[in-house]
Amino acid sequence: MLDVRHDHSHVATLSNESISPLAPFSALIITISAVIIFLIRLYVLESWLLPRLYGSKYTDLSDTNRRSFVNHHVAGGTKLVLLFSGAYPFISMAFGHGTPHSPFGPSHLTTLGDVAMVCSQIFTVMYIFELFYRTAISPISAAHHIGAIVIAQTAVALTLGYAHDRDATDEFILCLVWGAFDVVAEFYPHVAMIIYRVRHDDHLLLERIFKVTCGLEVAGTVIETAVVMWLFGSLWSKWRLAFKVVTPVLHVLFSLAQIWGAVIFNRLRLREKEKRKSALV
Image (cartoon, rainbow, N blue to C red; front, side):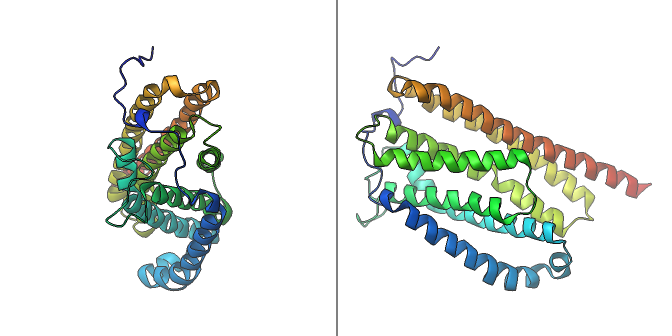
């Protein structure tokens, strides 16, 4: 049973209000973010950086593997941007004493809500890019990305009508927590797959990397579940019935997708282990 009599969650004290005046311009932010990612992908990564950095290890890849390789760089780089720009607003609003209208820095022109709003749109574009750019993607990954996109944009849309949705702010903050853990948990797999393409003959190194990545996926899922459910329980009395039902279901689906990722990396670890043993015979 969820005990809501003693609420020590900072999120529970937040007023239901507008997250940011940038919310009505979400489509423009998404468009600009998509254009920037396109320009970086075509004119920086594919045309210059990756061929110079990896040489034939990049140019000799098949079209499917090359697109996957490029996507890991795009997604990994985007997640680094999100981590560095969104860490402070996330921690301050979810666990500290900040509100969406607290200043992001010395200047009061940019607020925590502004940065969080922009980060949510960049997060959305990152997954849209992968869905359209890659030639092969597993059904589980596709479902995860589609779910993340829909949830992120639903949270933004609710903030536009916060006067009629009593839990709009809470839902946005909860989605921010979801997104933060998703960015962290899914960053290591990008690094692992980049190394896999570059050092495909070093079976011992890959075995160790896949083992660590598998462990991090499981640990991240457990920690994410604990934090999300703690926040969800803290806000139990404020949720509408629909969110009380839908939120746990969505979290289970996301957790299953992350666990499936851990299973895949464990399989890759076992495969590299077999290759290493075969090379010693």
